Image (tube, rainbow over all chains, first blue to last red; front, side, top):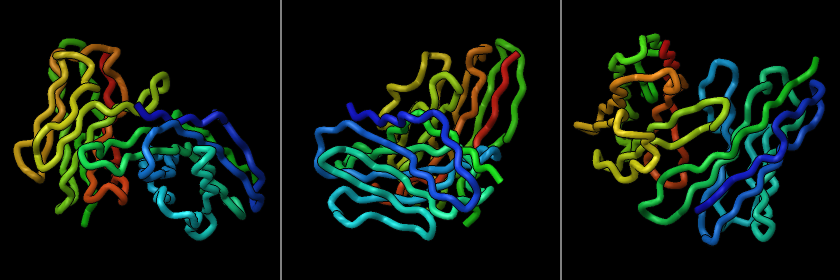
Length: 116
Length: 113
């Protein structure tokens, strides 16, 4: 079974600085999808960014980018120019590309604090 | 589209009572998922449906939990009888394709006293 590990329970960053959240996963599959979700205090789960394993290019969405290292099974999230609204729980998630395996496997999350 | 709609947003009930959580997925999404979130266990998949058919219910904690999807636009998660340890946030999510990830509802915070 696939597992996702987020080794940093909490992180903090100064406003306007850059922070990187770590995620590693374990799988024997070669084709899959990886995601980062944000959960602010409102508890709404928001998709931040996604990466297809077959793509070598790292995904980018405005101030959010990933560093995808397939051989190392690592998928970190970089937040540039951090804003107060970025404060939230961040969850890394894995999804198999095999049909019949639609479920997302989540890590335990990293709580990000943004200091003014 | 209004997104995934869950009701109620909050539910407080007494131990032993029946609780029904409701979910309306996004139109056109063919997969629906029920997750439970607690501080101790994080996000746990309870059950998911594909084209209204239950595919994997291995995460359903015990027989007190049941889920149905009578049609493509509605699903329920029922707990009978409820216990204090069922207190959690319950999320419903829907998905159209494997690559797209999920769209989550706003969750139901259940408190069993």
